[in-house]
Amino acid sequence: MERFRIISKILLISHSVVTKKVYSDCISFPLGLAYLAGILNKNGLVVRILDCFIEDKFNLRSAENGWQEIGLSDKKIIEYINDFSPDLVGITISFSCQHLSVLKLVKLIKDSFPEIVIVVGGNHVSAIPKQINLNFIDYLVIGEGEYALVQLIRSLNDGETADNIPGVISKDASNYECPKYIENLDDLPFPSIELLPLRKYWNGRKRYINMIATRGCPHNCNFCSIHTVMGRKIRKRTVENVVAEIRYWKNIYNIQEIYFEDDNLTVCKQWAKDLFLKIAENNLGIQFFVRNGVRADSVDKEMLTLMKYAGFQDFWIAPESGSQKTLDEIIGKNIKLEDCTKVVRLANEVGIDVNAFFVIGFPEESWEDIEDTIKYARFLKHIGCRKFCLSLATPYPGTRLFKQCVKKEIIPRELDYRKLGTEESVINNEYLSTTDINVFRIKALEELLSGYSYRLGRFMRIFFLMTRPLFFLGMLKYMYKFYFFRINSFKLSYRKMNKFES
Image (cartoon, rainbow, N blue to C red):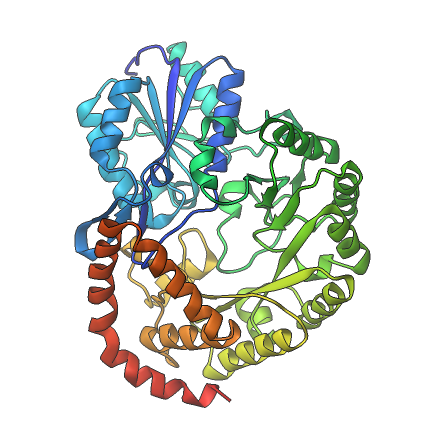
């Protein structure tokens, strides 16, 4: 095997945003990379994290085929690598839309610094590792990467093969072992968020951090790929460990807000209640939020009361659909709509805001199914649900939905993954076209978000962008190309949607 130089300095990169949206902002930082940095630091290695988006969030530039990238240019990244001179560069492909940009960067790094070990991981890699081009990549890390990356570095420094490290793939591998999931999450050091430019994230906002208290999801929704990274078994940090981290960052940065990124924060009911009670008892003066939602059937009045006393400002539930048939036969959500209704009523009794996620546009969905979803969303709004997120069904790699769409030839096998976003449909079916569903989503959101507030939010973003003229002009160019050239087809689809306005 090729012998690399001794590895002591590591650079972890979160690449630029790839988008066709008018504007992309960021409230999350790369928590996964911060966890990797934490365990690498613990093992005596020198680590830096480079979040390309936050370092240059007003650098909008055109990529191939009309796509946009926002963040540090590849040239600036190469300059950064040259200055730091790392022995290993780890890059995450957090979103499938980034994979072509990352592969281009990887080639540039390898051409510029052939002696640097390049490791790539993240959600996209974990979902479809066999489809990743390894021409310029030395290793892939699948699933949870903390222990795997440490073992890889030790093996390289000892001149040993990496073939038998669970979750690690090399282009020369003669063997591959499936990743092992970390059973005792308390053994992990706290994520090294101190390596991130926190002031740039906060920038006029309250001082916040992102946290995760559990990993894994036992459920099998057809559009979700989290199991490819975190597995299906729920693993929990101890309540004491979570609260210790909260106190740690409060003492260092006087944190004002914490966003839990868990997929299933309340699925273990008693553990969640114990956590909320312990947070409340500490009286830290922090506002808490649950970004990814909780299962409605895991919530009762006692839990909501504890959340309110702990400082939770709101939470999200995920009915996903207003059609029980869609939930049972298409999504496989294994949840009842009456549980969602009950939670909204309970939240209003307790005095904590509740919001709802919905998804429309599945291949088998009829117009009646989609109409049921919007009717149910209207009902939840009527009984007190505050905010809504209405996404389009997106066949991400590694999901049952992706396999289904490929099998039915609804999407091509060689799909441009940059098209995979929750605001632009790529799925056609016998009932609706992608243009129909895109327009319907916009009209439904305008209604659910009260129209005025939806348009006001857009106006405020444009006003903000005007303070950055070059960035604003780039957006105007994109808006002209993307929106105005589609207006004729949108007019036709708007007429089709009128029957859903009542």
